[in-house]
Length: 147
Image (cartoon, rainbow, N blue to C red; front, side):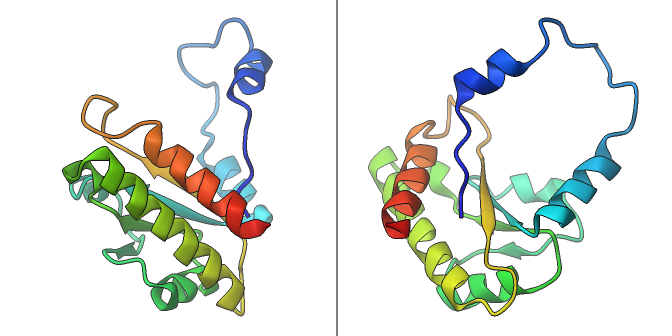
């Protein structure tokens, strides 16, 4: 359900120097890639102000399996789930992310349509957020549930 990317391998595959701007608009290619993957993009946002920059994307404030299954089943390419974990101590943020991973996995099993997903953990800042603890908790919880 969640594919892990090895950071070192990814960075090593990048060209030594990248252009300051891209020579083409990549948005159509990104949209096509997401559509072809048939994977729902689930964006976890640790801060309630982060969702102000998006439109046309559902924003959930709770992550119960029934709600998540509905979002996984629809034809939209993604949805946001507001976690507000930045407001909590790291241990609580980890617990919240483990619960979200568990609920997403349960929801994917219940979803009649698209049941594959990728999680994007969007945090405002490593100074105010709990990086990498939250991302690690998500990955570990999903890996355990898949076994």
